[in-house]
Length: 306
Image (cartoon, rainbow, N blue to C red; front, side):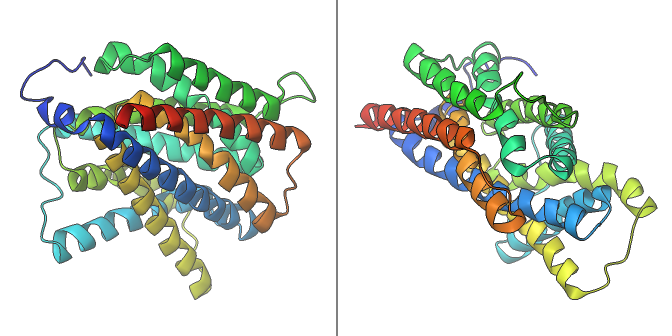
């Protein structure tokens, strides 16, 4: 992917990336990551508690997402969801989100939800580093300091070097790198395709590439409860990515990316409520720092908007 140059192709993005839209984009991002926490908790429950094959869980997440997108936007709202101006770019973007999901679901199979999400919090730093040279969206020093402060909060939670790190953390790191690239691509494609098209292509690689692997290990669900969880998995994936795509439509990548930190709250809460994972004092302390950095970033965007 090349850097976005000023001109007709990038005009839609430039027209909507106004400061007054940044607060809306931040709210959309917070909603997206909270919904993704529910997605991860459902995937972990299916793979751990119900012993559904992991690749089957991943494929059903994308399959239901794709079907719901076509039904909602293609049939009910009568919108074109498969006509992209840059189909090759869309496929690469879709592969990146498929990789993110596969790595993330593999990580949460072995790690607690709060452990997985803290490693994932490297994302804002990677997005900030990539957005400048690729998109021309450079990070100011106020925002960069706040991002680093949030990452220090993450270090309080993970405490690398104290007690060792599970080998499955490599999956979480793979998800982080893939997602950062996906975020940059999503911001880039916001200036070329509609949100509905971006939403549809988000799932397409996972459906196509994952199909033979899922069928090879397929285990027919024994009751309607599992089917219900599959539907919920795809629904949360679709809604979460819809909000995410809109967030990157309305604001530059470095503005919205740091608010992935909000997931620490929802992931920790769901980990405790669903799996009985009690957060440590380090998690709570790190969470306080993360929340503080997020509030500062939100305050800065409100000032710019006003």
